[in-house]
Length: 388
Image (cartoon, rainbow, N blue to C red; front, side, top):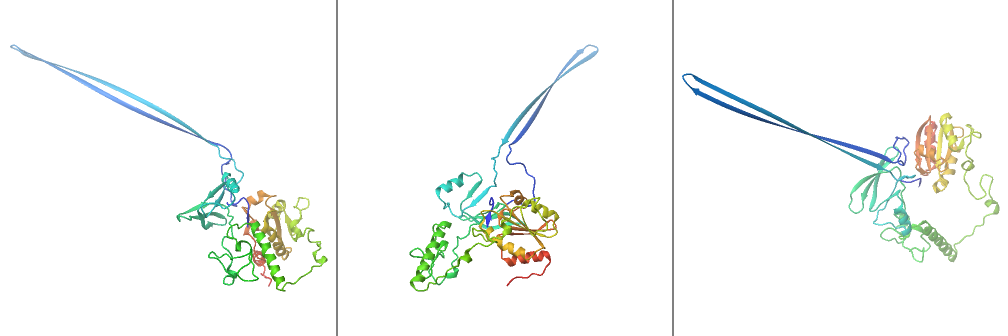
């Protein structure tokens, strides 16, 4: 499955957020006021008593009281103003998290340097994926440290996973010699321990595991098999007539066997006809979404997506079985990225189905014809007829 702008997925429901490409200035002002009041009261009392003894006794008492009150008030005000300006790095892409199970990456040094220097890429070493979680769309991954076993979660909106790390050798297990990891042991390039059986690609390659090396070993295995058959008088030659190789009206001269509808031009307001079963482009999708009473099947593709080229003729053939009942729209996510973004599509190929302005299905990757038939028939309320 090809992932657009991977791991890393927008959702169908939008929550307004601040623009991450504009600077943000935050000013914090703190004012502290301290008031200290000191009151001092001094009281002085003087008592004078004079006694005169005569025939008459006169006593005079004079009391003088003096009170002095001093109040001192000190007010200190401190104002601190802090201004922080955050200018985020402008990024036209989402953050991509590269999860590496080992202690280092195996790519070339130049490619590693480019990856590490990219601000949109974060590399996590010694990290494995335990599980994925979310609702209708992916929300995150459950990760674990391959050394310590420590677990954590990582919020992501999409996932592009690498396959082929476990050799798919169960088919020949017990018939040809395997190593302890399950890889087929070969000699002289492609020969296995069983004469006449040759292995190619990642089934025996424990070091390089690249597409170009797999293609090369496939060529070696094919030549070795042809030589083996010839040497043992088992080879049979077949000749193809020129008529069989000539392009037909329904196929391009370059040998591309895709259905004509998959290479049709994008619908325009002038050329759009709602009565047609098959359409292409965002204009057709918008019109059908608001006006069509049929089930709408939307196939999101990309020019460089290999699985898309596989799915196009498959899905077109299925749609042909429901003439007049289904509207089919092909969307190129590079030509109409805003449509794919609004629909929450992060990988190709993806099939979405809409009915009465509501999305009722979303399928990623390539499925079997019978799977598409069953889903379409269910939403049409028709009897499911699966070809034998």
